[in-house]
Length: 307
Image (cartoon, rainbow, N blue to C red; front, side):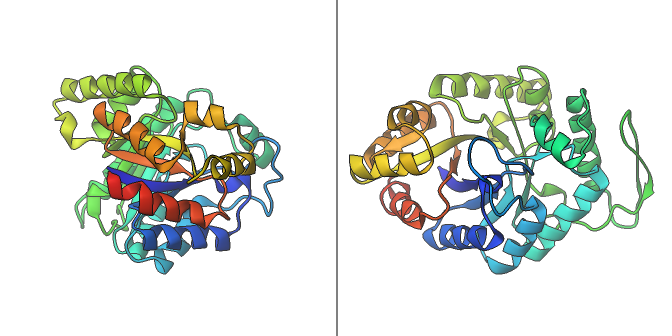
């Protein structure tokens, strides 16, 4: 089971903080460093020093890390036009030596769009489908050929379809969410990784069954799709340490045990085992206190080794 670190910088994190977490994650053996793509804080935190752009951040990290996978979970289609997004991600991939992954979603946080003057269309799922077609079309176009696309929302004419990612058209795309029809279909058609999100074991199993059925419907072997989840992390060697980490992120221990990976390393391993039983292959560990690098060290030494 792959373990990846997932951060929420809009809650308050400068680039230097993200760099420290990414380097620690790499040194400790985690598979990836991923971040959210938001421009506005959520909840009662102050969010200082303010938002950082996801792909600018990842470009910086691409030059300051060597092994770890880098990506978004997930970028909303409202922030970037698909042609521009394809160029940006391809450049980060080249800067990292082929370690970038693109998480792409429809977007949901209307307030951040209002705050920064970004349009928030009602039919975002149709925008998402077209963006997936454009981005993958640009990357898969052969050198020397051009790419054109005419959709409801986007039109490209005679694009040289450059630059190409270092990974080529196989640059992994992450699609996730709880939609019962369109999301599984888009994952089956375009994704390397389907993320079931922040839900329990039973609900995860159901979402995996749905996306597997969507794969079979389009003639794809479900085993070629990585099945992943996201879970908030709050692990400690003692109950006092768990409580301290829960308080630091403004959560209750009981609620975290119910809705995330919380408790002792043994408890976290046991719950990950239950997720593994329903087909989970990768876990994005949501780390909310980015100053607590000892938290990552604990998971690396006492959880990761048992998976």
